[in-house]
Length: 104
Image (cartoon, rainbow, N blue to C red; front, top):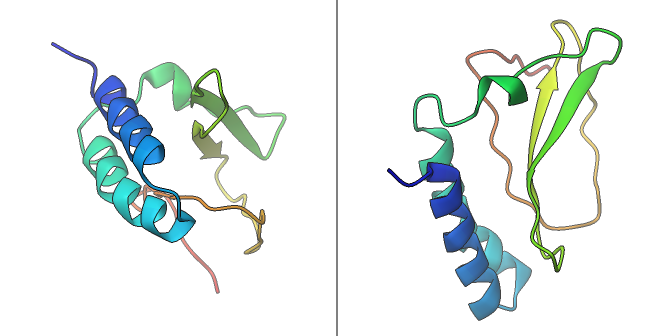
């Protein structure tokens, strides 16, 4: 059986090859990412681990040779958080809200 992450990567690479506008790219990638993260156990356990000495762990799951995009897992320790901020780039984000709580 093919890896669901690999299927998502193939879809994202196709979108990036064919679309130029960031808004269009984000809108096309969002359903691909949603499909990925709604699959049970799509993310290997080793990429779900916290690092006790840091506020969060960051795991690079995929980045093509041309660095056109990356798929990253962030795992926050209980009680940690981050203020809303901007990285001055486009992105598609997905949060596992079953484990997270937002404070505005």
